[in-house]
Length: 198
Ligand code: AMP
Image 1 (cartoon, helix red, strand yellow):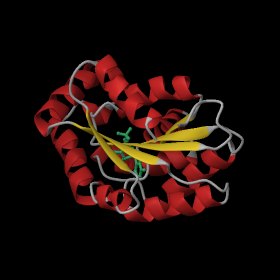
Image 2 (cartoon, rainbow, N blue to C red):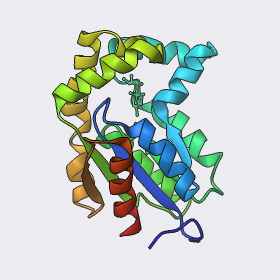
Image 3 (cartoon, rainbow, N blue to C red):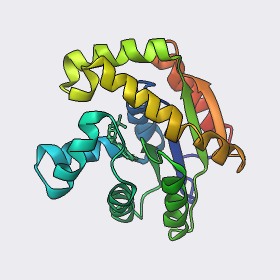
């Protein structure tokens, strides 16, 4: 069983479509297991806010609800990981989003003699996702949350490009699906059960 006293890194990919609750749950898990939370979406949004060259490049893709180019994303992720290479592990939220990124993550973690221990998927029906994202858009200030056609495009990109990662991690025996419907605390307990049973 993993605990925050473990001397082995714990690396979890939180997986699921936009609006599944990855960010909310990652915030709980990072505290409970003392992990570094990397949300690629958050890093891009910070870069946009600070008007960095990376932010300028990412913005046009994010505004449409499509993926930021892989090399840009992988380089950014690599620097976040390597800057925290002494941590107990990572929660990856919003990364990897396709097979290219999953392979890049595997190679990167290998440099730290580590691997993805679990991909935990939050499973939520589309109708609930759209409702949640439109609600979030009222307060998050995220332009990609306030327009239903952009939201639908993000969900479509997820099914076209990202959902294949389920079989990538299933084949490695690292895929765990949990229901992402219900109270936030109930969902949190489901995730903790998965991690503590590993
Ligand atoms: P998120 O916060 O995970 O919903 O991501 C918001 C947007 O950031 C996505 O619609 C993409 O445009 C971009 N993005 C976040 N993570 C990635 C990634 N791993 N690869 C490519 N684009 C990403």
